[in-house]
Image (cartoon, rainbow, N blue to C red):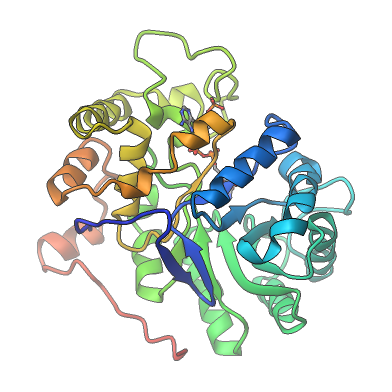
Length: 348
Ligand SMILES: NC(=O)c1ccc[n+]([C@@H]2O[C@H](COP(=O)([O-])OP(=O)(O)OC[C@H]3O[C@@H](n4cnc5c(N)ncnc54)[C@H](OP(=O)(O)O)[C@@H]3O)[C@@H](O)[C@H]2O)c1
């Protein structure tokens, strides 16, 4: 799964036609939990450090994240790759989901809120079972053809739906998804079963959200203490991915312990080691971190400088592997098939 790597925030990777740095900056809290002035200091610092990849969504702060970015983008538009999303409800747009008219209206609304002429990466935030998938994909293709969007991505799609979507895009010559934004970290590795192998085979770049497990992989939570007041876990409802009952479990604490030991040895932080682990997974293009403050961002910027050995990578992963599932288990263990297919998508 991994090779020893030496990356840095200045390194870039292709994401379809885009070129992004290996650490993306999530802006979900900007203009909300992170006040505007602090947000601008963070954006300046990230840019100075060499970062170029910003992720937002129309739904973040009900448009406030996009609106907060606008004045900063007015001065820095050409220096960054801007990704946003469509699909969740926002108050200045009727309905929800991915119906063609709504996708077109949402794109115009995001362009307006962001104050830009084109969105670099436009992502569907989630599946919409009430809209035929082909209708959404054709509408997205239209946005690329109209020059409103440079490239397309999906988020929170299961492998089978993503595979169907990609098949439809290829068959119809529609603009393809070049990126998938799934939750992925040392403490949430479900995508390794199907999504990750599919994305590798199909040439789709992974830009994981929640790469620090919403802060669990900073070492700030412990087995025998309540989550610190004001922390993500303290405020998380039971249905959220970072809810305590889901995240604060023994195998995850063990992963943090391994990261802490390697961090001590290397003079790094637990968060930097957790990000370095993710950067060492084949197929991961750029984790999208979500620091809430400038100080938190500062602590993450050098993560891409840490080069883990293959042994360290394996040691970090030892406690949180997803379960071995049929048919993958049988194909790998009895038949020696680790890689199942190389997909010829007929695209250059
Ligand atoms: N596509 C989707 O459905 C989806 C969903 C969620 C997020 N996202 C995107 O992904 C981005 C990141 O998501 P995320 O916020 O869950 O990612 P994350 O980086 O795993 O977690 C961020 C949290 O970690 C803590 N943290 C960060 N840096 C720290 C540091 N140096 N020291 C101590 N604690 C630190 C903070 O927790 P405290 O606030 O507790 O201090 C912060 O809120 C978002 O901004 C958004 O762009 C996408």
